[in-house]
Length: 251
Image (cartoon, rainbow, N blue to C red; front, top):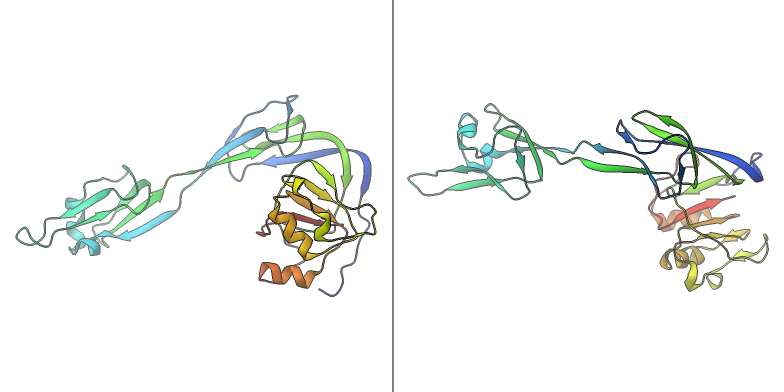
């Protein structure tokens, strides 16, 4: 990445912020219009369907697919736990008996007498959507989420790595043109959003991660060194899912 053009980014000491908080699929909204919330308030929740796991149980038992259903101790639609015995083979004259167990906790979706496969669906994964900011609920989207409004300072960054983060703000630089090194990172930065500097060294970033900082907002960083740190190329437009250890915003 040779250069990035910096557009006219918005910087406002006081502004009205609205955050749209929506579930990935329909669920339950737990707040009402007018309700005051904090950043960690759960505003909506749902469950993601569990993964599907096909397993050829007939092969495990060493029997024809047509015999599978008669050997199953669990039926379609029944709940199972990981490691639970779901089928047994009587063997040959009482010898060479075998059994099959569930590979996941969930539900048996289907048992095929044609392919010998048992389809498992893992238990649903609970998802909770938090408010993300302190504020007031100004709109509720039924079964989806809500819109939260707050008065806040607003500063846009040009580039970011990592997902949503929050914490108490802590300044680590004495002036905007100061380069932030690991000497600026202290033991009391755990859970905090660190702010400052025209440039952040990778050693300082690593130390902030080790110290448990929540996020870092700074003027610039060395792209090649971040690429080396992550182990892969980073695009300019699509970011947010990186496992960096904290969230990095570059202004």
